Amino acid sequence: GVSDQLIQWTIGIVVLAIAISGIFYGAFSDRFGRRPILILGLGLFTIGSIGSAFSFNITFLLLSRFIQGLGAGVAWTVGNACLKDLFDEKGYAKVMNQVHAVAGIVPAMAPFIGSYLGSLIGWRACFGLIALCSAIILMIKFFRLPETHHERVRLTFKDMLLSYGDLFKNKKYLVYLTIKVLAVMLLLVEISNVPLIFVEYKGV
Image 1 (tube, helix red, strand yellow):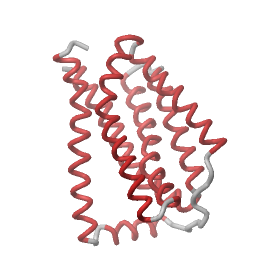
Image 2 (cartoon, one colour):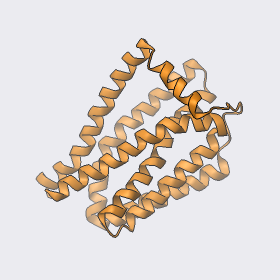
Image 3 (cartoon, one colour):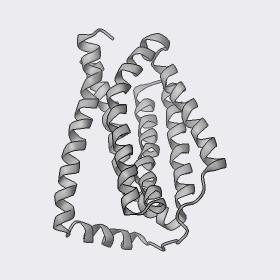
Image 4 (tube, one colour):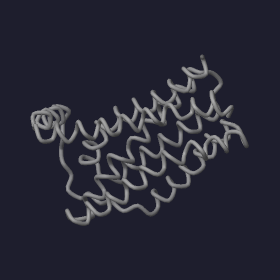
């Protein structure tokens, strides 16, 4: 039905925005530093969350969700780069295992928490709560987050295209990329279907 399509569209638009933004965040953080790009992404996420809470039609909701997705893309790309700046190879592998553990648990818990909050305070208030939490995190990052990348790289758009071109010529990279994409794809399919299960079969 319409509600099913709406759920799929809102999730899809966020995933699309995350994918698009991730392509640029890495290069921008190399050029301008990790801190300002992280703050920019958190700011976009907060604005998108506020816009979603006050959406007056589906077009505005999808636009707000797209902005939210653009902001969310900074977390994985630049957050990962920060960890790479701070840890050596062994330490980086250890901390990334912890990050992946959390990244696996959160999508499993979020639908239960979200459905409960949605039935308790409504979907608009849920977005408002997300906006409040992201605004608090934004303030903490603004005042407490140090810069981890001190060697600026002067990249042009042409340089960025050439770098991606080199990556996609690397066969070993493509093998690992394919495995990762398939794994994440399965996770995102599950995330997009869980709300439908709650709505259609659980009456939430």
